[in-house]
Amino acid sequence: MYQSRFCRESADRYLGPPRGTCEILLNPVDTQAFTPPAADPAPGRYVILLAGSHHFDYRVRVALEAVARLHRHLPEARLLVAGRYVWRPDPAAALAEAQALAASLGIASAVEFSGPYRQTEAAALLRRAHVLLHTKYADPCPRLAAEAMACGLPVVCYASGGLPELVG
Image 1 (cartoon, rainbow, N blue to C red):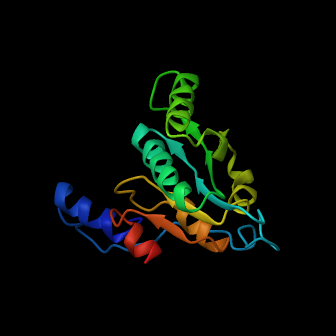
Image 2: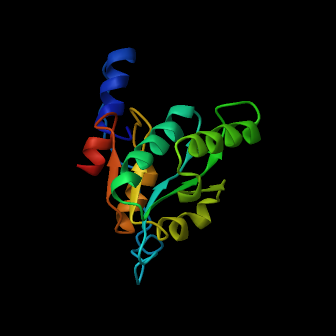
Image 3: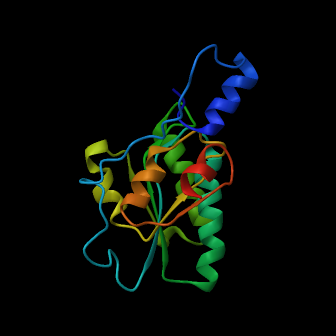
């Protein structure tokens, strides 16, 4: 079983083709739990969500830089950064680094760093936003993107990894 065509191609490249039959099964989503919000989650604002485990600082940096550029033309844009900040051994230091970058870009007041969340809180978190910005490069098959789409969110992402086959 592979999570995506990207995963299969990567496994074939590095491990060789499978000896038997194989299937591609994208990550499932509970469409009873992950549903669109009943109303606009933030009237008068445009909320962009960056969520997940941020193992690399570029994920947060790219989102902050993108929102800083967008904010010039769409001042009501807001960025909600949720998840673990773990690109440094001390998550508090990583968070402080991200907050300092937001301040240096002039968007500190437009960014909310909400920190880690449980999977049971994911649907409610997704319903707070208008779009999911997924900045992980070559993500094999992020369940987060599928959950966002189930909640009615468009997904903005790199055309790499398993995302093109998942998001389209």
